[in-house]
Image (tube, rainbow, N blue to C red; front, side):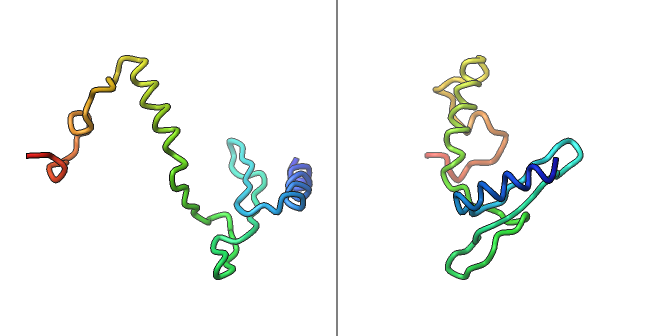
Length: 96
């Protein structure tokens, strides 16, 4: 299995010049894991399986979908305020 995955990865990587970490896992852990490209192109630092990638705005859609699902389930209303939902001290954000 690992050999087939590796062959697929290598063919794909040659075609698309992938930069990132490619990992295939099962319940026991990683079957195949390979990193390629640069994590910092200015300094030519290579990626490795432990590289942490900045995802910037990539999570906004997931947050929006989660909020909409909670609204559909009646667990949240669009009018609800974050200050009333989270059990945290947001006093610095409260308006007088």
